[in-house]
Image 1 (cartoon, rainbow, N blue to C red):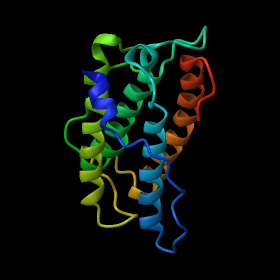
Image 2: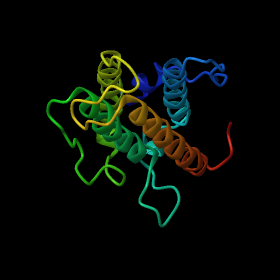
Image 3: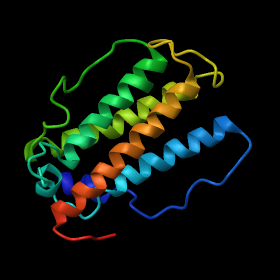
Image 4: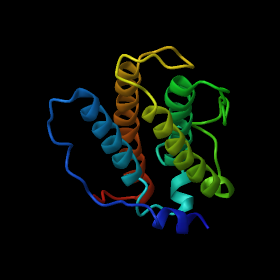
Length: 169
């Protein structure tokens, strides 16, 4: 059941990453932090609330953002860095798609994609290494993903409040 999968996630508040001179390590820390903050927006939401288009007229839900970020993880990291087959799991239906029946599968696919993305990052020799799929350097891809998470975490934050019907930090 989706609630079991969601309840198994770490939603604890974390501090910002500590400053450090190693840019590579700093970017990885910030990516991990932004991923965690994105997931924190899912806490306390039922599967119905995850799928709710809670800010009319927007056809956007927290689940739609989860689906979108799965595609971003794949495009920029798994495929972009690692090469291989480029897969659009949801096609053009990431933001508005998903349903109560797909919550668990969508969340699981996102979490599995993050694992594949981390494996693709781990084999990159350095920040200037080009990806085998996109040819973009690791540094560019990490900054892009940090930006994607920051943007969509903000959206998920507002959708979360609307779905809950209250501000709950």
